[in-house]
Length: 64
Length: 491
Image (tube, rainbow over all chains, first blue to last red; front, top):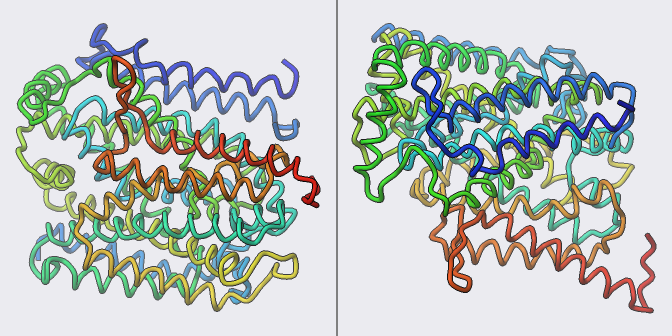
C-alpha cells in the first residue's frame, strides 16, 4: 500500500467495537468468559497490532 | 506495624526521594519553563511510555472502572472500547499537533489556538476550559489517596486520612516544585511497574480462588440482578447507543486534557509519540483485566453502598499482607503521578494563556510563576477534597469531561482547517458549554442523557451531543461572519 493509505486500517477498531449489537452475546464463551467480554479484550490486542503495523508502514510518510 | 504497612511507607518514601533526584535527569536549567514544565522536550520512547501511561491511567481510573462494573455490570465495560479507539485518534491528532507545537514552541493547547486564530478571547476560553476540567480530576486523585489511607488505619487514618493526605501533598508539592515534570516522569516508572505487578498478580490469584471465570460470571449475574436498579452481564438494546457514544466521546477527549498535552509535548520527537500510540494499548489491556476484577468483587459476595471500595476490599481479602502493602502503594503513587502532571498542565494554561497570552517572544520564559501556580492548584484541589462531598467531586469531574470536549473544534479540527472563524468558534464553545451543563444537571449528572423522541427514547453521551451543537453553531456563525462585509478576517 502506498504511504497514507495504511492509515485506513485504523477504521477497523471503530467498526469492531463501536457497534455493540454485533457482539452483545454470551456465547461462545472462552474459559468461562462471555463473548461480550473476551471479544472486546481481543480488540485491544488487535488494535495494538494494527497501530504497530501502521506506525511502521508510515514511518517515512508525513502527517495525515 | 504490619509488614504491609512497612512496605507501603518504604515505597512512598522511596518515590519521594526519587522525585527530588529527578531534577538530575538530563539535568538542565530548571528556571526555564520548557525544562521545568516540559522536561526540556527531551523524553524518549520508554520514559514517555511510562509518563503517558502514568498520566492517562490514574488511581481514579483504577478505582472507578471496577466500581462501575460492580455497580451496573456490562455498561461499565465501556471503558475498554474507549481506551481501544482512543489510540488511533491519538496517533492521527497528536502526531500532527506535535509537529506544529515543536516548531512554534507551544506549551499548551491554547497556545496553538492563539497562534492559529490570533484571538485573545478564544485563547482564554480554551485555557479556562482546561483549568476547570482539570481541578476535579486532581481532587479525585487526592480523594483516592485519602481512601487508601483510611483503609490502612492506625496513624494514617487520623482525621479520616486527611493528615496523611496533607503530608503526602506537601511532599508532592515540594518535589514537583523542585523538579517539574521530571518528577512525575521518574516516579511513573515505579508507579506503572507496581500497577502491572499488582493487576497481573490479582488476575492470576483472585479468579483461581473464586473458582474460575465460569463460576465468577454465574455469581456476578445473580449479584447484579439483585441490585436496585438491577445490573446485567450483557447490554440491553436500549443501551447500545449510550455504550458506543460514551466510549467514542471519551476517546476523543482523553488526549486533549491539559495533562495529556503536557506529557505529549515533553517527548523528544514525533516518532516517540507515534511509537507510543502503538505501545500504550498495553495499558488498555491492563484496564480490561482490571475491569474483570469488578466481576470478581461481585462473585466474592461484597455488599456495599460504596462501589469505590471494591478494589481495596479485593486487595485486603485476597492478598497476603505484605503484597497488600505493595498494591496500596501502587494506588497512592498512582494518584501522585497524575496529580502532579495535572497541576503542571493547569498551571501551564493559567500562566501561558490566561495571565499572559501566547507570543513567540514567550518561548523559554521564566518558570517561577508556573511553579507557584502548580502548587496553588494542588492547594485548591486539597480544599476541594476537604470541603466538597465526594459525590459532588464525581459530578464535577463528569461535567469537566463534557466541557473538555468543547475545545475540539478550536484545537483538534483546526489542525486541519482554517475555515472556522474565531468568533464563531467562541460562540459555538459558549453554547456547547451551556448545553453540556444543562444536560448534565438534567440527567442527574449521569454521563448519558435520555431524550424522548416521537414514540421512543434514545440515551446517549451528553458530551457528544454538546460537541455536535458546538460544531453546528460554529459552522453557522462562520458562514454568517465570513459574509459580513465589515469583517476584515483573513484566512
